[in-house]
Length: 153
Image 1 (tube, rainbow, N blue to C red):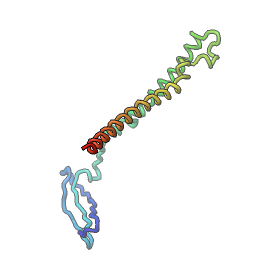
Image 2: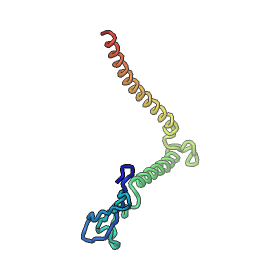
Image 3: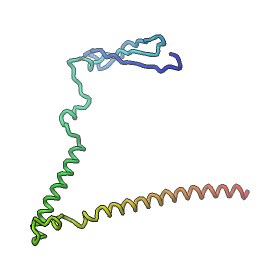
């Protein structure tokens, strides 16, 4: 094959019910001999044979991620409905169930949550930048010490 050309190959599958897979004949094609056809005999090429790479997918169309998301959102919905009813019936008897503003379960927490998340992110950023700047300062001061020792000699 000429050095300037890429080698290419194409598989050709042939039905052989007795073989898992067997590499048969390799045929060079084209004028430059850089294209190859490889004959592969396998039982998976037979038309009456249906093979599946992952049998678990056929029995369960939903993945674990979808199931987790559905359980999570279902739990949040149940939390909101039951919490609203408990707040309206037991805690906020004056306003009752029709008092939308005061029946929110853990209202103070949910109102403060965005600010708490922001504070946590800013704190983590400061810690991360502090660690990174400390390690870069240590490396630069070590380099300065080496330079100073070279000058003193």
